[in-house]
Amino acid sequence: MEEPLSFTRTSILHLPNDCLFIVFQFLVCSSDRESFGLTCHRWLNIQNTCRRSLQFHSSLALPNVSSLSQSGLVVSAFHLHRLLTRFQHLHYLSLSCCSELSDSCLTFLQFYPSKLLHLNLDCCFGITDHGLLLVAAGCSSLEAISLYRCNITDAGLETLANGCSALKHLNISYCPLVSDCGLRSVSQSCCQLEAVKISHCSGVNGTGFKGCSPTLTRIDADSCNLVPEGIMGIVSGGGLEYLNVSRVNMWISGATLAVIGAGFATRLKILNLWLCRTVGDESIAAIARGCPLLQEWNLALCHGVRIAGWQSIGINCNKLEKLHVNRCRNLCDLGLQALREGCKRLLVLYIGRTWKLSATAIEVFKICRGNVEISEEEIMFIGPGN
Image 1 (cartoon, one colour):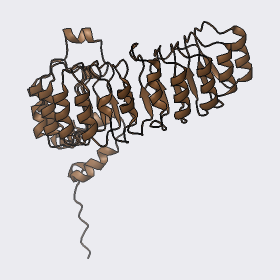
Image 2: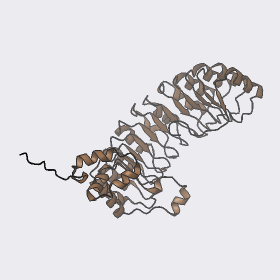
Image 3: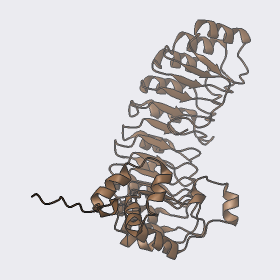
Image 4: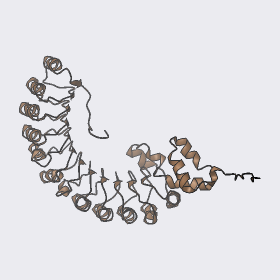
């Protein structure tokens, strides 16, 4: 007589951790992921281990700077220690707008067991060079850091560059204490650098980019005190695809920007010259000839561009898809005709508020180039993410 089969009662709680990790990865709904850890301490531990990003509520939207100076989210060393102890495998950490955050709060990054890749410290006014020393000591694998409006200097940037050589993305916009010395440390030590934002850095003239890596494809240098040698340094790597030098200083000769088309920026696809009032036909012609891959070009409020400049764009910019010419005082009927007869791939023309253009010339453009959208919208910031 056969013995009856015996059954052992099992449950999902008997599954090994590896299986529970797989189950968690298949949870798509955020509420399900958040509820996962409510089951028991073991499941909570798995949920914490799987977390890859952490962002404070204050960093979801960047308020104006005046309000930040009055109040901000207070994050102490104790809070950060608890969070880093709980979530030990973060790739992304945002502490932006924690305006009271001090250097000492970053001490625990030195003992953090994970490989943090992205760190956002925007508007953390208490972060100085010592804070960057702690970041460099604890985050050697860091690929991106944003230090918008932080009180850092060249010494801090040099420390960061030496400790985080894998850095690819750097944002130091509105950091007035930074100069080209610190920028040079980054561009020379971080050979995988891809994108740098230095907008409104009054101490930067661009020379710190000289000899930069060809991996550098994006530079935002809005409202910087650029000099001719600095612009040459910016394009010296040869890999640039996006360049924003809008609102270049009035005292810089318009011909200075001609170096962009001198042969180092042949891969350039997006160029923002918004409010560069002194840029003239010579520079425009050089850029049009030397940057054959240009797809979007912002020339709004560039009053120095005249007929010769528009003609050069029409003849040479064969891949141009978007052109911004809002409020260009010297765009006349002949200039628009040159654009109409050239720029065969043009899809959108931003042309609001022009002084010398007749209604007839605009109507003729619409008839002859019916596939081109005419927009009166004026866009200051163009390119990826804008």
